[in-house]
Structure formats: structure tokens, C-alpha cells
Image 1 (cartoon, rainbow, N blue to C red):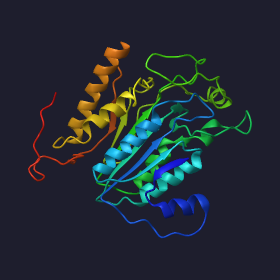
Image 2 (cartoon, rainbow, N blue to C red):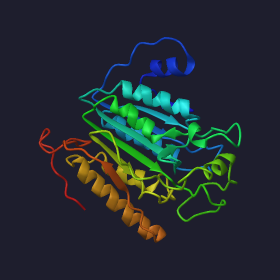
Image 3 (tube, rainbow, N blue to C red):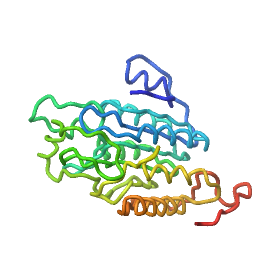
Length: 292
């Protein structure tokens, strides 16, 4: 796993390498950004490391204390990163969890796929080596942050089909792995993520596309969802609801134009407060930019 910059470096080192460390100080705005692309167990992806690097840069510009990790190897590393992230949140904080990479639904849950997990035997439950989105939510519930945005820019390849090139994807062809074959034996295992029914209070969860559907990896530097997040996240004077509308419209228009198939991002959860990434109207006379 390559890390651009650590939030709570000492905490991560203590968890991953052993030893003692002081707790990381709290921050008003905190982010954990993960991009998984170099998979050993499923088809490799092209854009997630770019997505993560660019999201990290934008969030830092917006004053977030951010951690960026790429090619997270296993469930334990996922959990250690999330634990360190959650430890910096408090009741007045704003949090962003961003993930770009493979995801899958299996059984009753959604899972993010680490890059190097392997099954020890054909009988092993494959979901035990993946990182459950419910585990992330359980961690987030420990801290009642003022607002949390969870972005899951996942499901960019058909994991269960024989390797083939799909329009809008530059992922390298690869044979179906033992992990994928094991997932096929799990009830309700399929491409795409299932709808979110129990997001933590004050949390909005943004999917790259509708549940049980596939997203495009994109033919540029970023995937469509991340590309349009980056276009609008630093725009001053727009509330998060308007921000998501602009992102959604941009993704729909681009994918329909390029691939003749509309990709529609979906939002789950609830948030009744007010938040703007780059300042809200009334904050130091921030002007409201017109919608396009």
C-alpha cells in the first residue's frame, strides 16, 4: 500500500507495525481517500489511483486533514485506516470517506475489495476477506459528526463475466480468479452495490451509479463520477444538495454522449443541516453561482 500523506501517521504505524503512539488531534474537516487499482485477485483498473490523488489534492485545498491510500492490500489494512480516520472525528466535524475501486454485493451486504486478498481454500467464505461497508458504517456511528459524505465510486467491471473489454473501460483483461468463483457461490452475489438502508445519521452515501448496475471507468484521467466531483467540489456558494445535483447531471450527460448509456449516480442516507464544501452563501459574502 502506498500512502501519499498520513492522517494520524503515528496511529497507523502503531496499528500496522506495532508499538505505541499518541492519539491524533481532532480536526474540523477530515477525509480518508482510498484508490484501489493494482488488483492481484480480480481485473485491474486504470483510474482509481488518479481519482484518489486528485480527490486528496482538492480536499486538502478545501482545508481537510486528509489521508490518501492506494492499493490497500487486505481487510485488516482497510479497518486500520478507517479506525484512524474515525478517531479524528468529533461531534462538530465534517467527514469525507472516498473510495475508488472494485465493490460487490454478496449475501446481505456490500463489500469493498482489497487488492491482494487470497482464499486459503475453496470452502472459505469470500466475504470474510473483503471489507464490509457495514463495518465502515458501524465505525462512523461511533462518532456523531456534524456531516459525513461517503463516496463509493465502485463497480467498474463485470467481475462475474469472462474477461472482455467493455465500452468506457480501460481495465486489463484477466481470467476469473478463485475469489470471484467463490463469490459466485454466495447468495445474492452480483455486480453493483445493493441499496443503502441504514446509513449513519447525518450521512449521505453517493454511489457512482444505480444499485446493481455497473459504472464506467472512463477514458480520461478520472472515472466519470470523480471527474464531475472534482469539477464542482471547489465551487463556492453551493450547498451539498446542489453540488450532488450538478455532479449527477454532469455524469449523466457525459456517459450518454460518450457511451450511449446513461450512468446515474445515486444518493442514500439523510442530512438535515447545511454544508458547502467551499463556503456557503452568507459565509464572508460568498456569491451563489448560477446552475448550468
